[in-house]
Image (tube, rainbow, N blue to C red; front, side, top):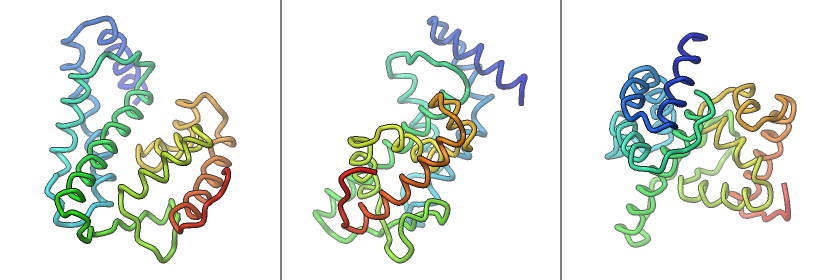
Amino acid sequence: MGSSTSQVTQLLRAWNEGDESALEKLMPIVYDELHRMARQYMAYESPGHTLQTTALVNEAYVRLVDSAHANWQNRIHFLAVCGRVMRRILVDWARSRRAMKRGGEIRPLQLDEALAVTETQDVDLVALDEALKALAAVDPRRSQVVELHFFGGLNLEETAEVLEVSSDTVLRDWKLAKSWLRCELSGEKLDGP
């Protein structure tokens, strides 16, 4: 993975500098990781979801290509941004479905046990997105920890690297964010995490 990581970093730097062919070379290298992330996201969706894993990866790719260049730091930063883009795609999809149903019942998503936001309550993606936005308003880093670790699939060390903090800080933030989200999603409002 070391040579792959450095190759990804080099291609990201070339893409930063305007080399459009770098993205074409980059995608086959990171495709498996992006597909894994998309599978992780799709695991929280209802079985009849019309958006498939490959389509989620492709839509994320299109949005990355169409967006202004980010100042890519490295592979982990790229994957974190891809995770954020995938989350945004699914939230947009959930919101459009909710609007189409005009308040009709939406099948809730069961959060992963690792997040353990709630033990008995189902949570839909829109509600979770709103809760993460509320968390970001009071503690942006903890919101980023949830996004990177839970949704982006980064381990604690990779999350710490992206956020430029220690793994112990990420672990502490992770635990506090889970507690805060549990209260937020259950209707109990807290002033801060």
